[in-house]
Length: 313
Ligand SMILES: [Zn+2]
Image 1: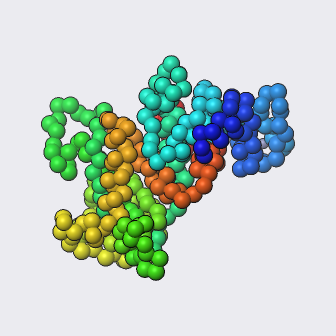
Image 2: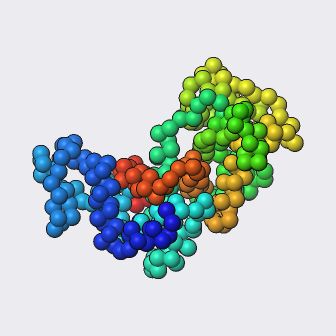
Image 3: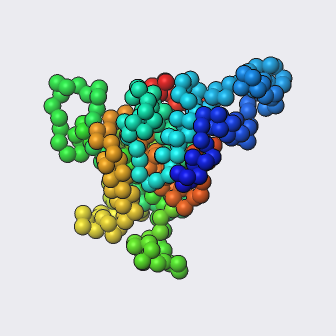
């Protein structure tokens, strides 16, 4: 949505509250107590009342905004900022734009929205044919044992491992080198932080990313030993200089994600890397979609805060 449209649709707190009520009613209000879905609207209190048991549901409860004291307008503006460009915004910048005194609630709001993006994408699996590889992202670990010396390279505590999967097929008839650049077409992507490259961890992550029998193109690695027979594994030794040719999209995705993240977030806490990746993948997967703001709003009213874990409270 363009800024001019956003400001005319949602000029103030009241317009955001009314719009939020409409979004929720479109998705349906579920009584937390008895599971009934029909309600009266109590205008004065701005609450729904269950027609069956009388239980009240506030505007925010059962959504990503549950327990948040921030105005609706802040959430709307944050959702607009996160969906209106390919880039991202730091919590510091959003705090500055909103003129809010405290940093923490703004930071938490953005992370809750990124979590919601991840939950939405977790509902879909990739299939047919994918590229699979690991990426290494520079992060800081706030709970790292400082007495432990820093290791270098891939085992370093300052590198977080990320498993990346990209749906990628040979482009045939409609291949347009000017437009697509690479001789493969890409559809959807997933990125998941992993603790290790052990084959059982890789297998369980891949099970959550891909449909069974998906054809997986990858570099030869012992980490992938458990992927057969559930998947159709096509792994081969790939020389460093051939990586971009053999696995073109997975490496483009990794470098684009790094660029988006590192341009804005100078120090990424490893505990929150997944959320930043969620945002990158969510936007990438919807790069041809209209109305990203509304899509994110629907996700925001569909997921309860308690799915997101206590650390976001
Ligand atoms: Zn009820």
